[in-house]
Image 1 (spheres, helix red, strand yellow):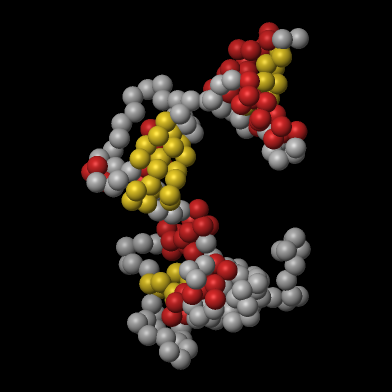
Image 2: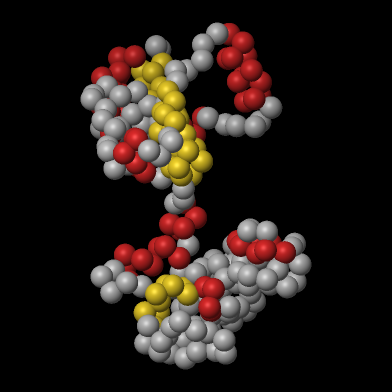
Length: 233
């Protein structure tokens, strides 16, 4: 829309749609006219090298593995911000929506939630909260590892259902910041080499005399506070 990712002039954008089937193309079975469906934002063909290798998001649509990938709506073909949408390879890229779910409940599942939500191999919990601990545990695949970095100042409970009743073969590991000068020296080399920049995390700075205000802003948190630096002078 802003021209940051240019597409052909006049191309209809939109790639996260819910819709109702109006018409079928040849070979589409298992659906009926009027079915409410979620349409995948990525529309793999199922036949190219990437698809057959299990890398559906990198689908080349018969154009070779180096093609743009499975994202076509609003990118290389007309997208969903229109009255009608033609869905390529519809048999593989439509999913019926259960009657008990609303459009709003499922629309993000076509793209953003699908990207960020998965039977993860490793989940990292870094906040030290019951809620985030449970969420990290629930998104693990069987046999996955929960790396717990957070500091739990209160009582931490392992929920029975999220722990798969103890049968999920999960591994929960805890850790503390490694100490020693060699660790710090190596990390400084990483920063010096430009591989990472932590300064954007320092959102506020206070003098030592203002430390109570610093703790208040950090503790609530407010004003977009992430990390607060305290300077003696």
